[in-house]
Image (cartoon, rainbow, N blue to C red; front, side, top):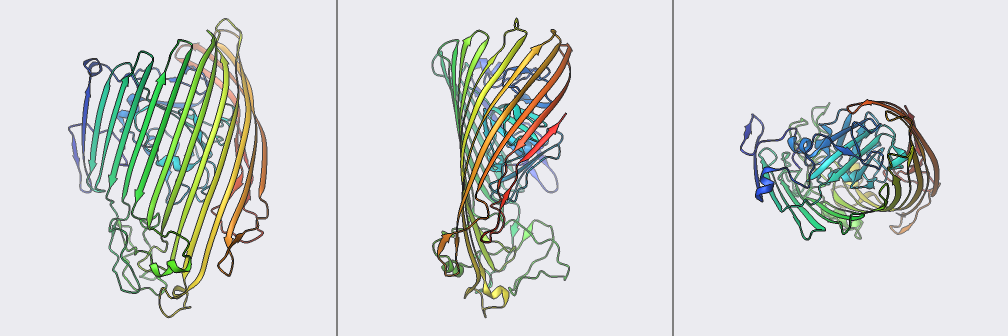
Length: 560
């Protein structure tokens, strides 16, 4: 996706010495839509947020937050999570070149990006579904209704993995009139073009559907000038190393057969393909001896940060030392995200809500990992993750009651697997007369993790006076994680590995108390004490030696 720091007008062309961008936008709809904002997107000045799992305006809710409506998101050309970071002070979102996928930091709180199985310290919530994987930052966020950035620990309503805060996204729903929208843009330096098509229509008086398709093709802006030397260096997958073909589809259906009941179903599929692996866009930028130390492999390398590298392809002769591995070069990422939200009004002032979530990830990449023309090391990773969650909650909102409450239960099942093979050429270490003849080391580590979590939460809100409110609650969480691994022995056989600890169990109680005073509709003073909890787990990004421990402890955050 293009990194856009500002929206471009449909007819504008912006040129400078290094980059030129052309954006074309076409809008076709019914005459009523031509005069009004999209019914699927709230373009009003007052944003309704759900920071406490109930509808409140951004000024009413006693939470430190930044709320971005559809108008803000469209104004700045928001296409993905990384572009949202430029609109929120203290928020940093980056894609990272490994199986972790991404790193999110809010006010300095984040998780490491070197462990693919780690849960984020800043939780991502999309249409009510919590996602723990950093890879979610690679999913295009098109056709958003609003974004809420909740700062500080948010364990009470969003559970584990939110000590730094929460990024909550709400995608657009179908409106009450037919709408078609087509957008396209092209960026010259990276040879990147994208197109978006949105279709929304009512089917009946009670059913509406909305679909969005997004396609992005980037040729790449890093030029690969590796020199092919027979027997030593090999042709790379492409001569532009950060290429990408991405497409995303989201479908939404909203059904409201009665005033008391509604159902909302959403499904998103995202795929990203690259001819190159995660290492292929890397550059050597500092060579203190005047030339890179390339382990005996010939070939030039200018050692400059100039968007030019010299990265050769894999030495296919090394494949024979791990023949069971599919060494197809490049990277392929598939992600699915589904949600089903059911709302039923038990009474005019009591609502029952059930949210079912489904997330699936597969990220595969293989390449040579030495950042040079020669291929002393070939490696790869096949990561799979699945998260199935269910939340059921009940909330009251009776203005005549002095106390209203929210209470609920949450369950999540989250299996994870990671397959890591690599082969190091003996020639690179002076143990063979020529490349591709023997290996000095080969490794294969296959992790399987199983996580299960459940929690109970509740909050009571006491309206002491029409202007003064006291709210208090807590969340109790219990989680288990189990690990199993297979590894390669000296004879080349795949055998079970031995971990120093292969079962983890965590229990946490996260209380929260808030006192707020609203002297007017546009003014809110509040103070709060909150707790946050982040899961422990297993560091699958670390090296493995039999009998060692790769577990890490959970984190607890407290703050006012």
